[in-house]
Image 1: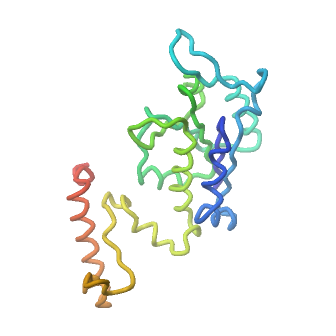
Image 2: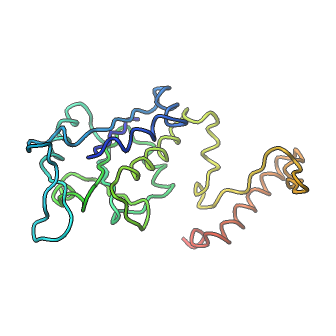
Image 3: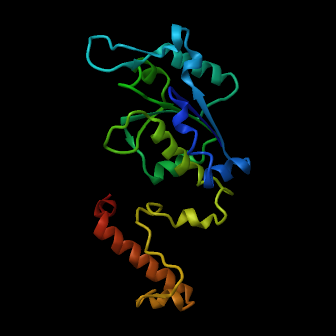
Length: 225
């Protein structure tokens, strides 16, 4: 899979993809992540990519021209399955969406900044608008990092144990059950006996019950959907 990310501040994304699972995915050749500096595609002086909004108001808006220039340049070598704009008013990101996007080959993510991007680019070029939650960030870079991590870890071969992703929270609209590791007894706090029994049928049943109960207590909205 290839993920290209267009941003005004590429420095923000210098770290998230250089460690742990995302680094492993790229080293294995399973994931390619490219951070593209939008300022390289503007024709304005001093690498300007934003301007004041028509009609007045606070803040600056990223102009359509550099965005189109960047998109057209990238499309010469890549056909994108989705052009994604990270925005607070987009569809809320969830595990189901991550699963769907992980099946794609090429994704382009557009990071908003300031007050956002010119609506005309959204109208004519963006195919999917995504929000990572009901709050506002300074830009879309952190949201792009969240999506890339969530999607990338689902690519077959990225995780050492591919069944691990299948047991994550939200995969079945349920939260994951409690997990334990050594020592078995710490200050009198013991691991549930069923997990030490070696009976995998009972263990699976216990985990399913725990997932359902945890979801009922913490996220009952998932059970009502």
